Length: 302
Ligand SMILES: Cc1cc2nc3c(=O)[nH]c(=O)nc-3n(C[C@H](O)[C@H](O)[C@H](O)COP(=O)(O)O)c2cc1C
Ligand SMILES: Nc1ncnc2c1ncn2[C@@H]1O[C@H](COP(=O)(O)OP(=O)(O)O)[C@@H](O)[C@H]1O
Image (cartoon, rainbow, N blue to C red; front, side, top):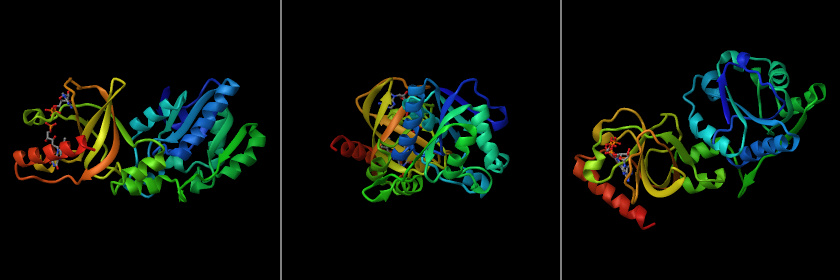
């Protein structure tokens, strides 16, 4: 998959495309439905599939909010790649982009990205003051000569599947419900970096991945599995700031069961199954070690 992260003015593709439009935070089942349509159309019509999205949440820029997100762009890109997409375009998101007239945005999609098929969700909005809508895309399809599909609201157990509901549930540690709405196990992809090398001394080495402060996931300890080199292992994972050590920066730390290999610089994927407890400040390393022992026992027996 080719990933383009640039200013809209600099982007142009040299072939006809089938385009999925959306923010796609979480890649939940409705998002997957939209993207799969674009991939199917591209395969049938011998064009390339494109996911066109923003590199930052528009609300963060428009309202200067510290907008919580389900996943970072790295994880999003890996999941989109797994759906068989040819190109991921992450538009550089600033006020200039968000203030573009919606007609300019459609012109860009048709002329620079050479869209022959466009698919989006029923509530997709774009352009200045969110004036661009699915019905405007339908209207303009005759002028620009592209096919269009608009995906209806998807519901599970009477819940509307939406990124904001998933964010809310993630921030409460409700992983079962999150996984149900996503249609897969919530996961974080990242590269393993070095830490303080304390954990191996007390018997629980942890692969460290530094993560965004604005990821919605609740800090704490989770039962997980970790994928290393395409193999999936059982694991236990802490997310947070390691208050026992006055650590700076938010980190995901995963201890993989029955595993003993160097993981530095490796790309891993941690899949979340269940929240066990909040992260705590312990008075000593031995208290922390005792608690981790209990967590591990619990995780192994589940
Ligand atoms: C299962 C598990 C639970 C953890 N719980 C906490 C916790 O409650 N509080 C805390 O400060 N650190 C917690 N940690 C993180 C440890 O502090 C961390 O692994 C240790 O400081 C070693 O860091 P290092 O990888 O930089 O050597 C936990 C780690 C694991 C694997
Ligand atoms: N079972 C395991 N789970 C996680 N990491 C492991 C495991 N076995 C070996 N390792 C290696 O040990 C490193 C973690 O050890 P640790 O003492 O916590 O060091 P650091 O502080 O640099 O993370 C991992 O990055 C990985 O390279």
